[in-house]
Amino acid sequence: MVWVIVGGFLWALGLACGAAPLDIGIFQRFGENLEQATVQAVGEQPLTVVTSEQRQFQTRRLKIQTTRVPLTTPMPWSRVMVSAHRSFEDAQGVARTLAHLNPAIVRPQRWQVWVMRQATPPTPAQAQLVTQLQQNYPTARVESGLQTEEVVLDLNQQYRARQVTIQAPNNRVKFGTRLYGGNLRLMPNSYGTYSVINRVDLQTYLRGVVPYEIAPVAPYQAIKAQAVVARTFALRNLKRFSFDGYDLCATANCQVYKGLSGVTALTDKAVASTQGQVLTYQGELVDALYTSANGGTSARYSDLWLGRERPYLQAKPESLRPPNLGRLDQEANLKRLLGYRQDFNESGSPAFRWVRTYSSAKLVASLQENLPTLGLALPDLTTVTGLKVAERSTSGRVLRLAVQTNRGELTLSKDMILSAINQLPSTLFYVESAGDKGFRLVGGGWGHGLGLSQYGSYGLAKRGWDYQRILGFYFPQTNLSRWAS
Image (cartoon, rainbow, N blue to C red; front, top):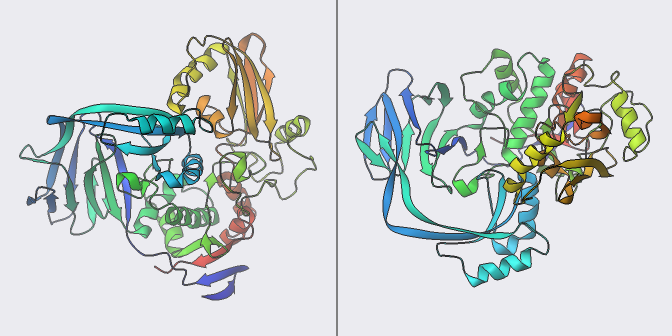
């Protein structure tokens, strides 16, 4: 590998990451509600449709409907669900500790970790494993059922199929109202429905990501920084949805991707001008995390999720002239930080500072809605009488939030706090009484607070920083490397 200095960054030429096209799940549960969709050709030539039943035909317009068909022989299934999470990163942390059990990371609603998946009714071995797992994962349980029907695809009311590939000769195809590059495929997933998958090259994928992950009206150097981070994120997170047969989803659980319908000249220029550029640390792609705003201070990986620290994801002030506040795990210092509104990279952004008020009834409704999806349940929960920060990290993030209820004390940890309490922007907050209205949460930032702050990159770009310097600020100790496409 050859290293050169360009623009203050150490560049690695020829980083081998592969050049295979990406498989993006643009519709993750097609058929859940017996949907229908229309696929249309773009240009003069028709689409070529190939089914798993070895049928092939051409058409300019393909209407796809889903229908349920009874199985001749019902099929039992069972599995051990270990834990459920708001983020892939947390689920991945659990899966790594259970590598000997061949875990699967899936997303039926929340991210979940499954082990011991079987086409049988529940077994004693599964029950025994759950008993062992519950020592570290209290939510572990056996899930089972009997599949009595399957969802199949109806094509133009002429053919039925269980898997379909749609090839566009000019690599342009419309699914519904959106235009996509590449080709499409529909295949069964793990939830009894279908994944609609867009197979597309990396640069075309990024053209459909960058306009939606950062506003096209952002400063150009901030858009270029976003393009590099989005490319790095995609390459590092390939196979995030491998259990369902594709690489990445098209939502904020991966990166927002909406095809070519919303591309702009400026975002296209940023993607093209940074082609092949990625961030690396010690020769490996970095965990290129980004969020709307860090709230005045970035976080460490362990402030939110399980797993080892990333040396380049540091808790540091989101300011070129930070006030001397001391340790932010001290409540008084954290309150002082959140009282500042000027001289931060994110100052003036709508995500920089916020206040949320929660009545007891609103908190109860939120907990009742969200706790079951995390594998928890509090029957007969009727009242929340107290909220208290029990532990805070040195970046100011809440590590443990104690919730006093009529059923006793419930402790929410790290990212679970955002899973359990609706409309809470981040874990960078403090709690104060709102009198009869309940509890007032005063905070800053929007999202997990790790890595690139998009609004912060706006501020730095407006100060004249180029994208390389912006990336160096948010990912210290990393190198800007050339990906060999």
